[in-house]
Image 1 (cartoon, rainbow, N blue to C red):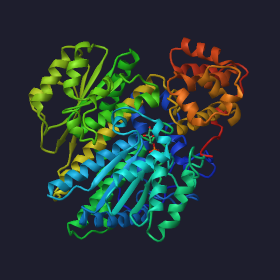
Image 2 (tube, rainbow, N blue to C red):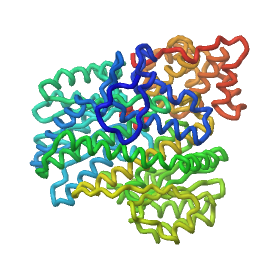
Image 3 (cartoon, rainbow, N blue to C red):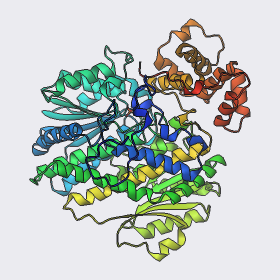
Image 4 (cartoon, rainbow, N blue to C red):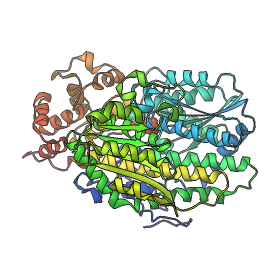
Length: 622
Ligand code: F6P
């Protein structure tokens, strides 16, 4: 049944999904449910794969439905109203920037987006000769922008200390804590700190689960759970002393991968909020209609992007071929499009146990262009070298035909520079692709067209808007690039056999959230109890068949620390559960199998194994 459609949509959003029905994976929050759309993702060819992920992304724009459980959505009146309320508080800061600050904070992709957005809006202010008043925090510091540092995400005290440090000397702070799953202890610590200092802080929580689905496991070293923090905020919301922006956007196309829809929805929601605040600040009469107009530009971005589905599928296939042959996928971007590549690459190791060299992002100008707080980090190690010059120096000499290189630019960038780099790359590999963004009426010069064999050409309609118009265009290009890259790298890892159905099955357990996710995946695939799955996981982590009490009773952060340097932990546990065998036998079977997916599939088909366990609904935010 299709719900009542209130707004005129740019794209066709799918019918309400089965995941919304009462009883569907009941114990799991939306952000950890498996999306029914992508149930067979692991059997899809590249073209189907892009279509399935496109449909998942379209769910971001779906409206509130009339079904028994109806979740608040992006377009729900209550969401729009709260966006307006927070925007008013942002405006107050914009009026007295010397005394106030807007802090965006997050972990992993959420933290990278915090940096991107705070830099974008500071630039917007500078262009108007106004004082920049946005800043960002990312758990693990600036190193986490380029690489994945998951452990600090578990530390609420670190979060609170960093927030206090950043806000020193300020009188009013709008704090925006992003945790897509309403789950990161680092963010919970900061929200808790804000609530203890409400005279100075307005805490705003951004995520994509209802509050009653926020994570409820105890947080080591603290007396609260994320859910308790969120509930306290909810009670402060009536008096407008705190806000929660948490529309449902549906489960991720790859179960739990919040870098995908969660990240995109964060970008859409917060850019809309800030653009709205800036418009109002410049004395333009703002109404709900303005909000809707901005949101529609993002819907348009979905349509424009996925009109290139065939070419995106071809790139996905090429990327998969390189990764399957132990080659690499290099992404070379200009401006913030380079950062989109770096963001995407940083999530491949934790999501798919990819080597940190498998997918790498580079940006023209390196750290200067990133505008991160800690400046040049390239001396921290080879994976921190992110400029095009670094690529030429350290990657180009060993580049080969097994590698794929993707260039991302707009037609306003220096195309002679693009051409020069493409020419150098083509001497080493013929697998050269590009994403080129143009505005209607702009055409790629023949010289560029001639040397790049495969171009995903994204053409944007002209926006006749005042100053902010240029920013909306930039935001659309970034989101479009994010959608393409998420699809290409996730899709390539699906084709490489790193996903079973739509579950990540070879991810790095580097923090407590990921430990719980692993147990939940084991329960869903094997049908065994939480206790049995936890023990199988511990055997795989520690490499012992008989678990001593010392291991059984250790803190989850200890397990995560131990697991983070190990390989094939989750697959070993899955196969051992499915075959009721030792972790050694399981590991040997995995090593002998062509892919992780194939090893799981064959273990499910072992004669005598009880069928149907893989659809068991269990495990979740306790
Ligand atoms: O723990 C790693 C990770 O899952 C990243 O992949 C993700 O971007 C980050 O955590 C943040 O997640 P959330 O926004 O749900 O707190």
